[in-house]
Length: 230
Image: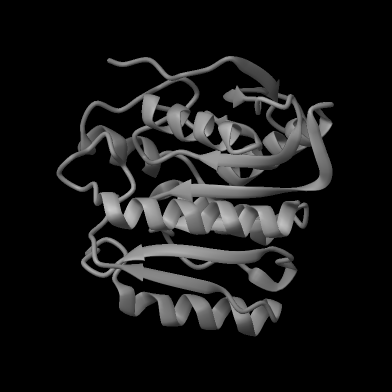
């Protein structure tokens, strides 16, 4: 089985426990913080590469390992590992990652941005709903298992990327999601649709990757995070 990419350790919660992650620093040595949240495959080379790309764009980027070092080698195993991670536990671990990222001297400002993919896109919204230190949230085709989070405490602006041919996150489901966010928080999310399917940003999976859509979504993401994080 492939191994997860890890290079830092941090407290998982205030109550104890340890988590791991992959940290990348910008060439300047400092910048705004961004939490990068994995797909259901785990903390793979692809997620580490995205984290490196955020760092090259000027951010202090951290990808927490939600699966504790495990990486799936097929979709059945990925589904099992995702199913065994309660949403509350994942969001709690991610809040520990926010603590860690904001505590580092390289991180500027008192808030962070988040970007996540598939399962991680759902956790972007779950984390932003519970942690007001998230000021900018970017879900890529976010899968939300179970009921929607309570968005009444949401402080983050939201930019979402979704595929028009995505059977996992159908475009028609975005209306209900957007309405829930706006009604509960007063924040109007901005969702972009692309002529692509699920996981169109994952260039490690040629069967799903859509280069034009991925490039446009990436530039929009950088512009959005820079505008809200500085």
